[in-house]
Image (cartoon, rainbow, N blue to C red; front, side):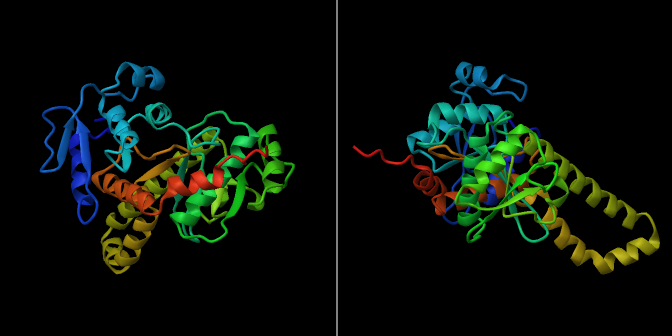
Length: 315
């Protein structure tokens, strides 16, 4: 119920994803046209401008909270929402709870880099973070890259304002030291201009910086692709030339389009949650659901739990 384009677009995406072993269940208000999918009636909607924690407590039977609770109770294997991101985090912490040893959940987003997809983490769950949080985000991102993207021994870099170890604010400097001393394949700092080129398999940062970088990338990609299409259609010569390059242009759009992945994992919870953009199209919703299904198939939560389990204290 929380998507910018309304429930009809979400339902259409769920219909597109349905089939085989994948069965979407809709959580929404009475009267929503489910087109044959199962609809579980809920009461109340968490709006985009609601304060997340307050809304989750005040609207326990809303579509968002009810869908998260379904994963906690075992009625569903994963939850996908295009609603309020902060509310998804609050509901996840309340209903699913954190994996033992996890300090803070983080949002992991696949970036369509030139050398193949890489993971940006944290992309918006934590506006403020400490160095030890970034170390744990990097570990969670490495598990994501291994299990979902199929990368062996993922290469990790820290997003900063320069490649030199001494560049960056205090958070970046301290996080760099922790990452360098870890057992991760850490390659030092990288800059924002390197993200689309493929700076690393995993790029780690705090949620404020990561969210700004993500939205800048997505806005730039969308604007450039749209401008390219407009320029081709502007003249007869361009239109004729466009017919010749159409296959390549379609491949490029598919690779760079944010809808290709559709969503991002909220990692660090005891259940699988995928956050989709508020303005997600039906294609993005369908791909977000498929992304959630891959996470279930690859037991991302279980593998994260094993990797991040606190050490057993000797007696």
